[in-house]
Image 1 (cartoon, helix red, strand yellow):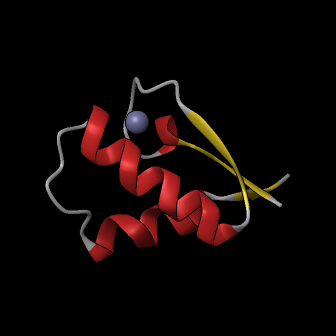
Image 2: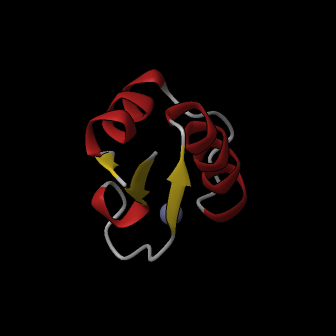
Amino acid sequence: MKAFRCGDVVPGCARAFTGTEDEILAQVDQHARQDHGLVEVPDALVDQVRAAMVPA
Ligand SMILES: [Zn+2]
């Protein structure tokens, strides 16, 4: 299991996610579209999310 805090990539966002890496990426993808208004999540952002994940 891993954990990711959106605030590590988007300052001020309080959302946090836990799960497998793939589960987190799927949740973050949806969250980025719904709450941050992204139409598409760029690979560079996915890399940032992966890098910010910590063991949980
Ligand atoms: Zn966020």
